Image 1 (tube, rainbow, N blue to C red):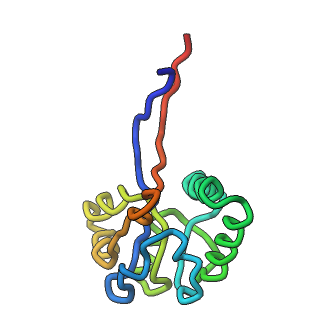
Image 2: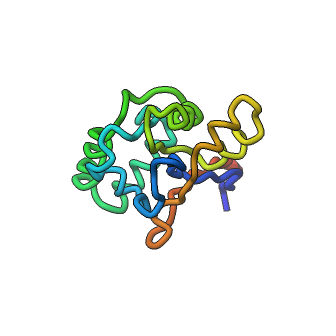
Image 3: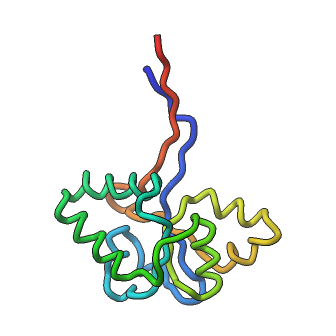
Length: 146
């Protein structure tokens, strides 16, 4: 009882409503499938949100399999990683890509922003791996000292 979770957010997959059937993207592992070549956008893999997801892939699959997955995702990128999570949804809206990783709460924020509502309305969100280990959740926490 020395730390407390303050916020939680899932690392979800955003998908084009027009170009993606959500049944095709049920797991994070699906992002490495060659059928998505040139169709994925993401922010930097060095960002803490993505580092945490990568760490969870290592924990679930081991380093070698996680590296294979990362190489597969990299080969499926539509462009060099850039921007933030909302920029990825905008790229889906603009047709640059069809899938992106993003925290779930951004969808609500975009739906409440007059400039970004059209981006949000162009996507659907899925929570990967719900049939097995569960969707990855990032937590912001607080530690207490004595």
